[in-house]
Amino acid sequence: MSTSLIITADQSPTLLNEQTGEFYHSMHGAYTESMVVFINNGLKPFLTSLPAINIFEMGLGTGLNALLTYDHTCEIPVYYEAVEAFPLKEEIIKILTYNTLTVNRACDLFFERLHSSPWEVKVDLSPAFTLCKHRTDLLNFQIRPHYFDLIYFDAFSMVVQPELWTEDVFRRMFLALRPGGVLVTYSARGAVKTALRKVGFVVERLPGPPGKRHVLRAKKS
Image 1 (cartoon, rainbow, N blue to C red):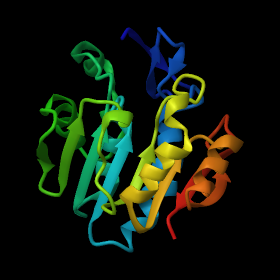
Image 2 (image 1 turned 120 degrees about the horizontal axis):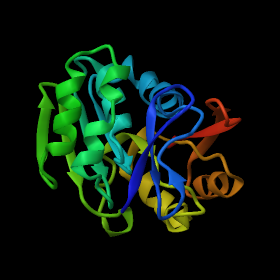
Image 3 (image 1 turned 90 degrees about the vertical axis):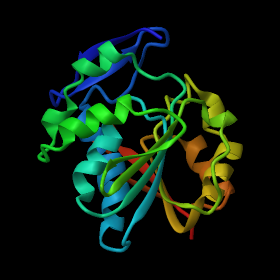
Image 4 (image 1 turned 180 degrees about the vertical axis):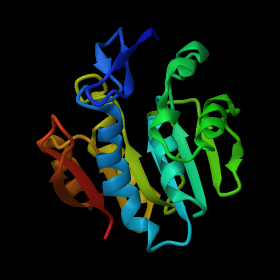
């Protein structure tokens, strides 16, 4: 898969998938989008209510969401599981400068190990952050039920990956969450809201980052 580096409006980098014409993050700001959608809407509400947190990410991608999660959890134990069907090439990873967006200098080593660590095994990237990444697509992955507190649903858009924005997929996400668990995503399309509600989620439409009016948070009551 051929990708090229693009600098977004907030000066943070993203990638362009040259086959599909799809960007990995918003051109209005990669860092800003990840902070609003996944950290502020998803992670932060749990930081004062859980002693530890289990997170599943649909689409590890550049690793930005995982890096920002590490940067904001400090010493709270995190188990982070993710799938990625199209891992990035080493030369692309080396030119991503996301570590400059963080205040924790340990993020430099974390980001390197995030991408260099082996697939299909649990790896302690820090004393409080355990990663398990799977080189596969979501449709061929058996996600464990009733285990996760938070899901970052960060697939490519419905135009590019319509098979991932379906009732069947969201039913699997619902079953993977513990009661009170949350799924957050950048998409606020009507079809996405309808599919989430049909499988049992209580859906909130929240203000989006620059360039996007709304994003979604879906809770398993």
